Length: 128
Image 1 (spheres, rainbow, N blue to C red):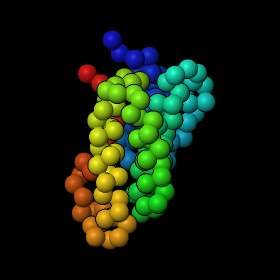
Image 2 (tube, rainbow, N blue to C red):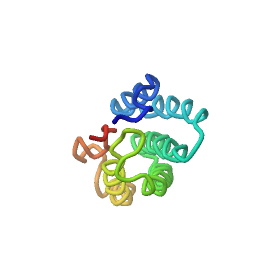
Image 3 (spheres, one colour):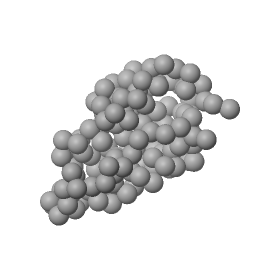
Image 4 (cartoon, rainbow, N blue to C red):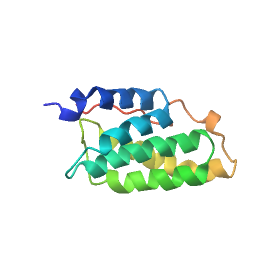
């Protein structure tokens, strides 16, 4: 059964923005939804917001900001496994942990973001 969040057109727009790497817009879209959420899923929405802003920072080579936001998102996502809000949170968690493991190399210029594989920054995918 699909999660009610997936029937919210704004939530779906936020997913599309995130997957198109329009991370700042995705952040704004998800944050607007988050303001109206009550209950135990509120922190999961916050994690998605933090992912969006963390990847925004990464794309603009703000490695400190990226590491901070992505780490905060991971700390929340571990409590919403393997899926939440109709999303495959296990995939998001694993991919983001991998990105975090490479941040120091990126920050030191040992590897360049443009040299990373196309799927280095994850997309939000729906849970099966």
